[in-house]
Length: 300
Length: 101
Image (cartoon, rainbow over all chains, first blue to last red; front, side, top):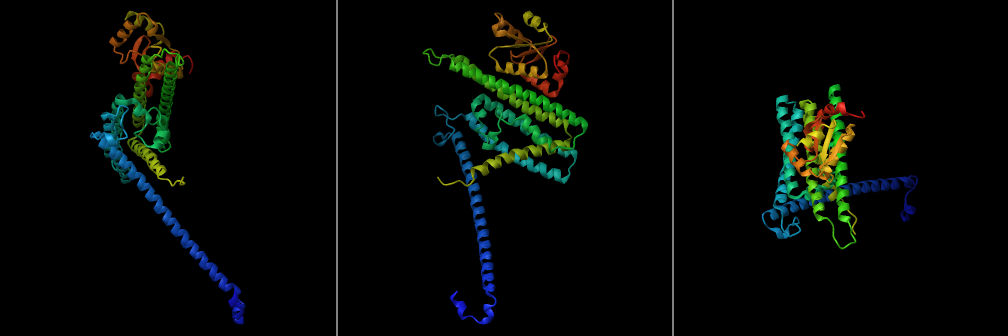
C-alpha cells in the first residue's frame, strides 16, 4: 500500500481495479491448481488400481507355479504341506472360464446392437447356457476334492463372497437381477416367471434351513461332553461333514435349473439380453472388488 | 421290500429318511412349504432299516434317503424332487394331497 501515496489522482479514483485484477489472477491460479491436483489424484487412483491388478496376477502366477510342483512359494499349501492338484487345476480352469465369460458378454452385446437373426442369436444363447453348465461341472469335481475350499469362496472375489450362498450365487438374486431388465413380458410369461420365482425361493429356503440344521447338528455332536475326558463321536461329525458336498451339489443344481427354466420361458432375444445382464452383473461385482482393493487408505 | 411298499401306500405322500440326514430335512421342509404334510418314516430307527435301504436302492432311488413316494409310487430322491418342483410338476402331483393352499 506504500505506493498509493505516489499515485496520480486518476488512479486513486479507481482503487478497485488493481484489487479486482489480483482477485481474478488468484481465482485463475486456484482453478489451475485444483485441476492439477485432480489430475494427479486420478493418476494415483489408476496406479493403485493397476497395482492391485498386478498383485492379483502375481497371486495367480504363484498358484500356477505351485501346480507345476513348486510348492515352497505357494499360498495354496494344504495342512500337510502338500498342494491339492485338483484344486489348483480348478483355479486355473476357473480363470479361463472367467476370461471366456468376458468374451461371450462382449459378443452378446455386439450381436444385440447389430440386430442379428434369431438363429445366430440361438447359438450365442446356447453357448452362454452351456458355459454356465461347464462351471457347475467344474464345481462338482472341486467339491469332491475339497468341499470347504469351494464353500469358502476363496476362488471368487471379495464382493462376490459377500453375496455368496452355499458356494455360489443365490437363485433368487439371479431372478431379481434379470427380471427388471427383461420387461416387457407377456401375461403368460409373467405367470410362468412368478411360478418359477416361487418354486426357486421355496427350494432355496428349504436348502438354507437344511444347512442350518447341519451346522446345528454338527455343533451339538462336537460339543457333546466337551469338559469330559471321553472325547466325542468323531465318526458322526465326519458323516455330517460329508453331507456338505450334497448341499453344495443341490445348490448348484438349483442354480442350473433356475437358469434353464428361465431360458425356456423367455424368447431368444430376451434370453440373450438376460445372459448379457447376468454376465455384466457378475463382471461388475468382480471389478468392484478390484476397485475396493485399490482404494486409497489412511497411512497407519 | 414289502415293508417299504406297504408303508408307502399308507398315505398319499410318504418320505423315507434317516434322522441324521439333513438333506432329508430339506425335502421335508420343502413339502411343508408347498402345503403338504407327508408321512416321514425314519428307517435308521427301524430294526429292518438296512434291508429297507437296500430295497429302496433296488427300486432305483438315486440315494437311499430321502426317498419320496406319492400315491404309493416312487418319485425319487432330492435331485428328482428339486427338478420336478422347479418345472412346476411337483405342485400338480401334490395338489390332491395339499392340506393348506
